[in-house]
Length: 254
Image (cartoon, rainbow, N blue to C red; front, side, top):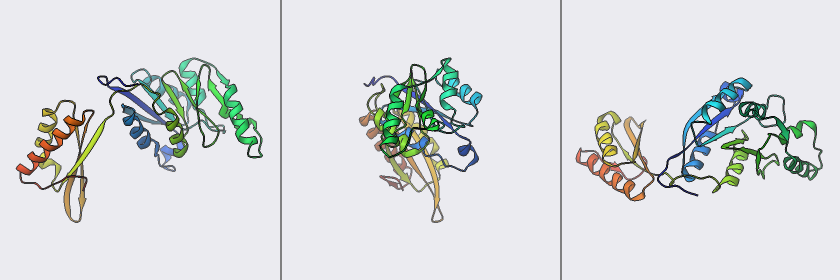
């Protein structure tokens, strides 16, 4: 369902000591942000927190009330340091329970592979009371949805599967679309041109991404809007203004 005139926002909490230590490189921020844009939802804020219940509770309570949706990644596995479910339940003031459908999913998954549903694996059926499940065809352990929150795996390809299961189920606005043009120019030289183009086209955002390559300075300008006609007009106008100022413009990213 879409509400074109409303801007819907989401926040993301990335949970895990391994992310903060640099041992694991996060990939979920980019894939969740891209997925949200297609749903017509903007990722407005990201917070990375350690495997400490109090810090997770603090982040959940801070972000869930000022955004339409809140996603978390990490900390829902079978080990002792997977405490996301406990922390979210504490933030919401509800107990943790074993979800019967999640238990069935896990039992079917492991017995189908000649294994058993151990106590450790059963931890992945624990949810805050009142939660619904997000299907996970990759590992059997489901994600969790409660209110406006989505508790998801930390492993990127499992997160991707959960996002796929959610596609089209969230209310959002018009999807944000983008076009990129490139220019061999220092962004500081064209800052006024960029500012004027954004001001002239309501609802347009222009991002500037400088680079240094082959001994030359350049920048790619990403123009974003929810309106395709406005986007095209802004790109054409910005291109003309840059060319008028004497800069050669590439019609796509350099």
